[in-house]
Image (cartoon, rainbow, N blue to C red):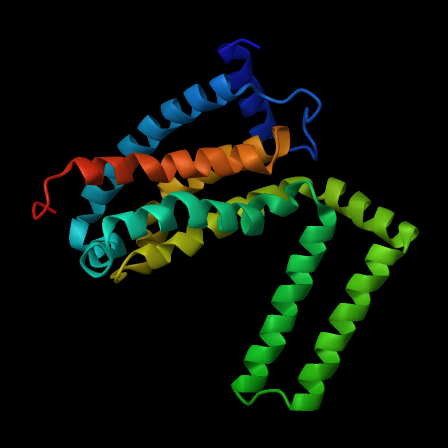
Length: 236
């Protein structure tokens, strides 16, 4: 497929996200790589403009602290291997696996009930009942073909909301990359590069597979890491 056609397909998908969009016609890794590099340059321009507007210095990012606490090879493994693998499974794995989506929702609800118990807002019995109910609900949807088909139907019907929801959550979770936030109304600008990246990662996940989105995510993290390796020690 021509690169121009791939870019058009990406745009069409963003306008109307569809479950399993052209999954029988996966993008070539060549086109994925070129599209990512174009998007990466755009991300950097957006980040430079946004950070200049907000007057954020380099010390505001937690990467500065990590460079003082860990060896470069440790940060590389975390950023290029571990983070892409786990973040893609958590944030985009379910975009083609409705059962995983249900599992994440139920898992989050169960974690919330445990949190409220620890905070003293729920008794042990109430928290236990909620967790048990969540487990039973998950088992029912997985074991019952009719219930599972209803889940798939719901997933397809509201896939656009689910897709953009994953994009927003992924972007805003990266606000914790910063040490301090002086003005919360600037948060959307601070995570705008991650929002743009998440759009492409989600598209690649739906169009190809999870390994393709892991590849793009790892590539995205590897570029700044490679630049750090080129900087003389003590200059950072």
